[in-house]
Length: 338
View 1 (cartoon, rainbow, N blue to C red):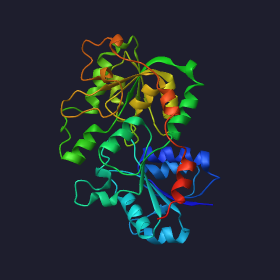
View 2 (view 1 turned 60 degrees about the vertical axis):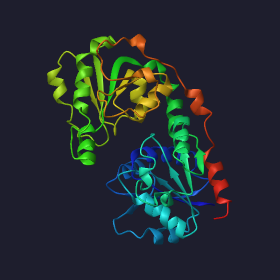
View 3 (view 1 turned 120 degrees about the vertical axis):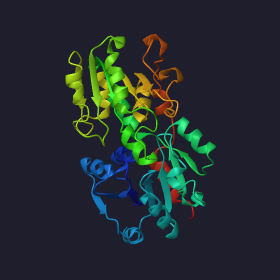
């Protein structure tokens, strides 16, 4: 039985890997690695997976040798670089490596760009889960790009098709740590000229345009629990719910709410795929929404908003028909000479 060593740090690849493991748990022997303070550790733990905790001084080469790994899979991140060490050590040990790419942003940066020789950091194979991501990776010159079935989204589609009667006339705002990211990345929390609080308050002030007073604010996994509590007092006429992403599955939230609004991010793509009204509200020319949702659904203001201006169309069939299944991919790669 093939032995797979998997390392993740960020939430997105971890969630998809959990869905993959659920489907192919018995076909391979799995070893999961993560730092205890990472989103991946919590996601793996909640899924009941046995995790081998990494430390700053962990010897990755020895870890891979000790389990005699046949395949190394990494989730990629542009903030954490441990996945590059797993790729590097896999290459040294003549083990095939696979990098999971997602979310249409910083593909090259995840492998060290713009530093010289960054291409040498790329895994032997990289996977994409949708046509837009695949086209982007191809355009950027990545080699051995694999179209891989999007198991996490397919799981959500299955759940969605059983919950259509649960929808309420509510707006869902998807929070993100705009100020924190701008400060960390550019040294200026107002680098983009706006923040998540301003976007959320514009929605609050224009709820009548959605013919509802019901607003759900879904916290980002890195948000503080009380981040938006001030809204409850400031907008007493609105029915505002603050949602903990660790307590409410995303798909349940998407089922419940009629309109989905965010700044950027994968949730907008999933909402569009499901046939929800998905809107990017990004009030700045200094930043572009990279999510491949309908162009007319990317707006800079709610002024003059008409719901008829937006496009709503499910693309569930496209997701269902995209890519190769995980087991077939791994077995094909394992049979290739390293």
